[in-house]
Length: 343
Image 1 (spheres, rainbow, N blue to C red):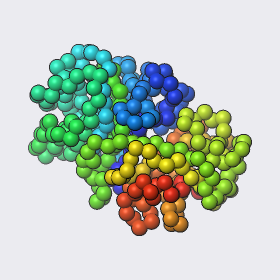
Image 2: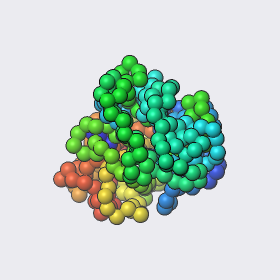
Image 3: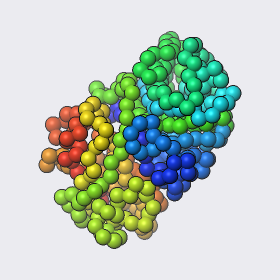
Image 4: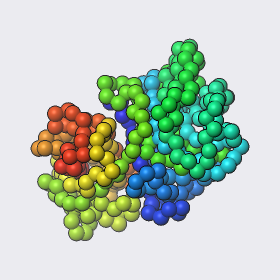
């Protein structure tokens, strides 16, 4: 596995410049966070959907530990929305928030922090507010042979080699962080990817990408869960999860599959998909959730993920189509079904 996380920030609310609604929806996906009530739904970088605005100096989100590989890459679109003396925007960090972090200076340059100290600063960028840019940061963790490479809109703007990038006790960075850990941040985020250096697919810079979200729109080949009301698929197709409608099952092996709306705005170059499932217990008995994909008659199940608490989000990343282990295309995604099974 190389591609670990994607987010288009589309389904955290419906009203631009309103708060994330319900606030819990962001917390469900990002278990390590602070001040998410200070984040707003914002217009997207391009196309439909939304972006996410952070407008507080003590608000951040990160997904928790995702890898133990020495190499990690974070890519995302960002836009500064307000002047400030310094913006802490994002970083690649470990579980203790040690790592490589990027700040934007008043001159529109990136200051690269190793842990809490400025190590390097770009020159000649002159980035300005209210303009979208696409940033990619690659870090190789090592005490003497570490490397850092920063790209903006596909161009390399900083490269450092043979440096100490081991800022914590681990020989790796495990996750990314967005927002201001006790520092100022007014920025919009969109079209994020995070990967490590393992495997043979998606293990290096992906370039400028888009993340497009789609929802169930019809029943698939199996409807074995019990809907709270109406059709199964209509209980799980809200743009913003409310918890008012849902499907349930306590029977091992029961399967719900759903057809999805067709992709819009993407015609080629699909690097992977991420299936998000919002779920929780209706009683006190933990169970296993299996995410199933059915493509051209070929089914693929991931390992059961334990569900043991209230509402939160489980995900499955699929870099390749299980029908032939080839890259996804809009046609194969549009024809595929995705769903849930009791493990």
